[in-house]
Length: 61
Image (cartoon, rainbow, N blue to C red):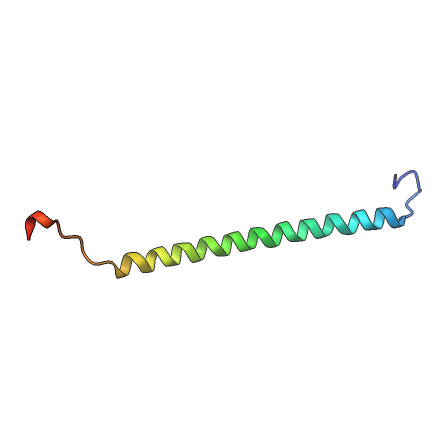
């Protein structure tokens, strides 16, 4: 459609372009949030492991 209009941007093409850019930005932001959550999860697991009491088998008390 863009080529058939010889490079002119119609309102419809502008709207579609903005929509695609918005979707791309949202996808990138979502990806960054997932990365941040994974880092938070790793940190919590490390803190949990560090705070755990040593395992003592009951039969050896």
